[in-house]
Length: 372
Image (cartoon, rainbow, N blue to C red; front, top):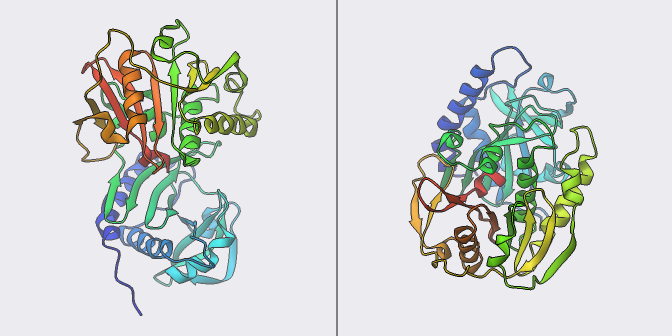
């Protein structure tokens, strides 16, 4: 029986096609690039992946990554003798074989129809990738071309909600460097780039699913302690410097150890209270209770933005972003204006708080669309 079409697929496909067409045109012919999928191909990929995401095999939700490219466009193509139809049932059945990170199902046209021709791990720059992140939750992304395997999110579709990432967000005044790095338009030169460490911490904090708060404080002074209840629940003495040491590694160094250490630190944020780290990535403690700084006003509003097309600025009470964790983080940044606060909610929302010098208010950047 023919399924009902996923309406959001048709709505989103023209904008996604225009994005990839522009990116490929800007890249020119100086490097190996992926083919450009038509709007119809994008619609077909999204539709099939959406319905597959709602099916289960033996109780498991499928985790699939679809890449639009021909076998000859990949350096390590593993081709099926008989291509699979691009249909929800076929995708669900093959999903257990390709659920490991970095493995994609290759999709291309054959006799005018979209088929799954096999699997691959190597995809060219700007290759259209569609990832099933959860039931009804899809992420359109592409490879940035960096050896580290960085992907850039283009759009997020969740049910009827469509979020097209605003690639021009980094050009806005006071866009945090962390958000710019997450958008993928400012490529880090090496692992010494601190932004990449914060990006990894943000991704890992969101992944543990328990919610958490990470405060990044200046090394120049100790005024941040005026906003923390003493003693810190689990103070670290001397400061734990493993992440600081690994953050200055060259790109070909032990990246796996850096990732393990990031996950180690991010795991601490699951403990009740805030984790505190200075901007050299030295861990100072976790389980810290935030208190309003003496003689500072209670934060009543924060300005909220999201790097998504059509998303306006909004003034809201910080509790509207996720409760007391967000309120305390906003208060900390309000009182400690050289600090940064990263806050993960249990439901997957993620907010970066910083003080806006232009607007004289705490600015909350909603970035979960960039972390999927």
